[in-house]
Length: 286
Image 1 (tube, one colour):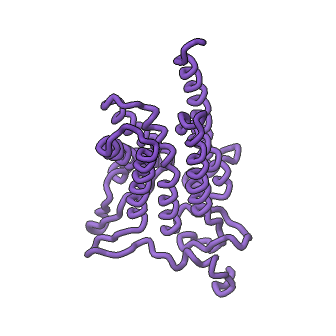
Image 2 (cartoon, rainbow, N blue to C red):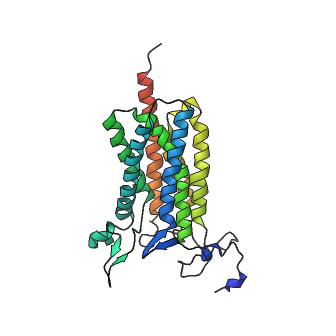
Image 3 (cartoon, helix red, strand yellow):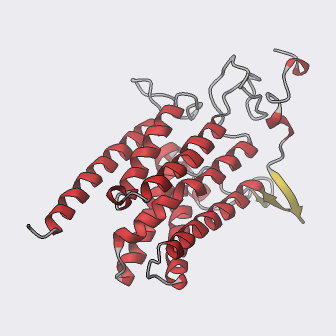
C-alpha cells in the first residue's frame, strides 16, 4: 500500500471530511440531510424567479402546493426505488429496515435511512407532481416544464452530499485526479465520480436546459430534454463509478444505473414524439 505521505492534498480531501455537521444531544445533524433542504430551496427559487420573469399567471400558493407534493414524492420514491432497484432481496427479509431510521440491535440507536435511488426519486417526483396538477386542474405541461428545467441544479446538492459522505465513489484509477475515500477498505485511489455527477448531471445540464428553455421550439419539451440529457450523461459517468457491490455488472458490462438511464433516454424520446404528434394535431389546419 502506498504511504499516505506520497499522496497530494487533492487525493486526501475525503480523508478530512466529516459527514456530521454537529450533534444535538445524541441526534446527529448530517450534511447530507442539509443538502436535501438546499436542493428543495434552490429548485423552488429557480421556478419562482422563472414564473416572475416570464409573467406566468400562477400564484406562490400554487407553487407551494406543488413543491410539497414533489418533495413528498421524491423522499418516498427515492427510498422505495433503492429498495426495489438495488437491494430487494435484503428488504424482503428485513422489511422494517426499509422504513425505520432506527436500530434496536444492542439498544435503541438512530441510524437514519441508508440508501436513496435517484431513479426512484424521479418516479416519485413525477407521480407527486402529476397528482397535484391533475387534482387542481392546472396546465400539466406548463408546470412540468418549469420543474424539469430547475431539477438539475437541485440535484447538484445531492451529489455534493454523497461526496461529503464519502459514498458512491468511483472505480480505481492511477490518475492524479483520484481520491482516497475512507469507506474504501482497499486503500486505492478512486475516481471522485460524485463530483463528475455534480458538475455534468447538475450544473452543466442546468445551463443547457436554461438555454433551451428560452427557445420556443424546445421550451415545451423540458421533461423530454431532461430525461434524455440526464440519462445520457449519467450513462457515461457510470463507467467511472463503482458498481453496487450487491449487484455488480450485467453480462454486457453495464451497471444497474446504466440500464435505468437507457430507460430514461427511450422514455424521453418517445415522450418528445408523442408531444410533437399531439401538438401537431392541436394546430388548426391552414
